[in-house]
Amino acid sequence: MKQLCYGLIILVVCLCVAPITASAPPGGEGWLTINCNVDGASVYLADTYKGTISGGLLDIENGAYSSTYTVKKDGYYDASGDINYVPGGSPNLEITVSLTPKPAGSGKGWYTIHCNVDGASVAFDGITKGTISGGVFTQEVSTSGTPYTTYSVSRSGYVTYSDSISRVPSDGEVIDLYATINPVPTTQTSLPTTSTTLIGGDNGWYQVTCNVNGASVYFDSSYKGAISGGSLTVPVYLTGTPYKTYRVEKSGYVTATGTMPAVPAKDRTVTFHVALSPVSAAPTSTPLPTISAAPPGNEHGWIAIHANVEGASVMIGSENAGVIRNGVLTVPLATTGTPFSAFTVSKTGYTTTSGTVPRQPAAGETVDVYVTLNTAPPTAEPTTQSPVPVPVIILGLLGAVVLLATRGK
Figure 1 (cartoon, rainbow, N blue to C red):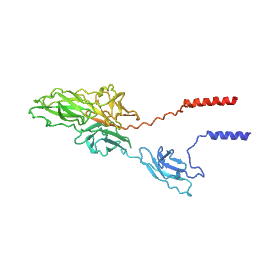
Figure 2: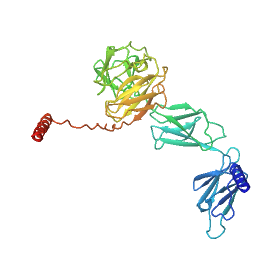
Figure 3: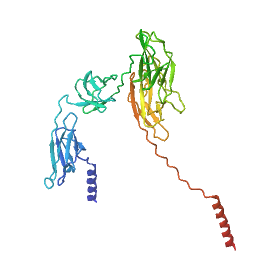
Figure 4: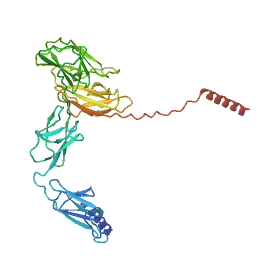
């Protein structure tokens, strides 16, 4: 009995002893011991994490059978190599690794500029660093060097885009920055040839801003040009007959008409905004306050929602912004208004897609957002048993009556 008690005590003591770091046991085989001068360094075998160095080493069971090792830690250069284990030789393998500290200022990160125009020049703090190719340009920076504060993207014929840089990337980090550049608004330098005579004298300009590029602009019945980059500037002679009405139209949109504003003063520009709404059979709803036509003088930009499904409804926040026509819905937003970010695109028979606008547009800028709607999976209909026809039920009852009558006889 005493021997049994002693045995139980020994067993309990063994169970309570805290486990120790694995090490190659006597007679073990295939263990790999990594010795390293930096505690806390991470060890990987064939890109699989195995643990960290503690007390100058890490023992890994069956690690000797791996092909490669890598030891890494922030602030040090990585160390890696091949594992050359020879079966039949030493049953276990030991490798000594020494990590070298990186010199101060050696950390590297990157800025990646995304832009809609290839060939555009990219500058940081006014110094050109390269050009957009395939929609991107990547600039390497030192994590401890003098930080950049601004970047800009420019190209001939386009309005230059610039923005601030909020922070420096950490070692190995990539920070994505976005720029959308739009064509310089088209300015007509002379009255159209439809005028009967050119009247000399002082001149001014009308600038028509609109949410739909490519829309045609008419003063009275005279064609003046098409909206490009969100606006069209038209020169007028002040001594000529003043225009009375305007008309802006494009296929797929409701034509907008109105009375011309006051004639501009000499060398002055009068700006007025025209908002086009997509043609839609869907019931109308109260528009967003910032989606309505902006008062003259208010700065505004546009968010263009591109989708693959015609007639899909677009919600911005909780408000109905319109429907997709010709693959896009362009929504004007006042730059001084409440910013909107969340949007939803939906249509019956398709899976609803939601997302966020990457950023608010600057004055005169269009921010493009692309959405793909997928066909909704078919809903399985519940299976039901076909009801038994009434004639069959009647025949069955008659048969039962005949059978009972026969047995009674």
